[in-house]
Length: 450
Image (cartoon, rainbow, N blue to C red; front, side):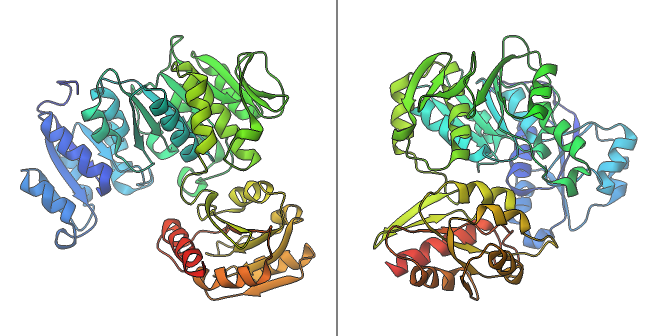
């Protein structure tokens, strides 16, 4: 870890805790800052805040008092989930107080270079693939960001020989200043988090921040099939490395005659890849490009792609029972994520779907239900999904109370050779705290069935 003097004796407010806030507050305290932590959760219910208090850090809990901003803070490090419309943030902007997220702190103290991955879909799978490829290739990777490990915590342990592979949200990227990954990836861009950003333009601008500080010595890996992404690439100073599943490129990553290729070199046959789904080929191509740019050999890339079957809750292979293969895609919290899951399989599918009702209909799914033989629904949107299933001509439709009950029903409607797929197309919050909880219940139900 670099012993920077940037924050020595500076008065800094850490707004919002969770893992990132706790780690950022402790780091800033270690760097000699005068840290105040403010979190909405009451102190009596806030063990993280209590732990910071024991370290000698000032803690204010239970509310976000706007008058705090009058205490002369020189910087705010905010939890990425706190929107910029929050009165505290709006007040700080009016006072000209800089606002960062802890990703910026991680960059400032890290001795290791970063490989940063952003986009709407595929971030976690791509991040995990790169990490596994670099590990297989003895490149000493560390993994950080939205994938579960706080970046500023990882950066404290990183050495020059490491590579920090980091998944980055638009929320995190809005709070950077000097952050500059050696390799940046933009997987794709679709409508997402517009309740936070307000407009698609603001969302895309936030994503584009991943390359704003890159130079000619850095790399930007981009989806060549998306004009919006390529428009970002045109503004970047980095060396552009495109990828495409649809056409052969003069450089970058692409598919030729059933081979994944990089800069004219055949790396591996597509038929040997374990991870299902056409959409995952995009993730594979971008991950391969990052691995090759880092000096990883083909054998290491092949070894990973032959064994990697998916990230948990993201089209994750669970088990096979009497010829039926079960897949957990609980992370599919909207139609946009369920569509590629449905496209991933040629075998007949029994689809488990439903969840939180956000007011939308599901007609966009209809063209992709051709391979679906039965639908098992649950949650608030059950009736809406049943309606589109009927329009799509699906005869076998069954409503159940929850995911646990959906699994044996799906088995009953299936036969050997079928795929039983949990891909809800909805958030989980009507019945489950997180999509992870929903996916774990599915996995447990499959094991019970077996």
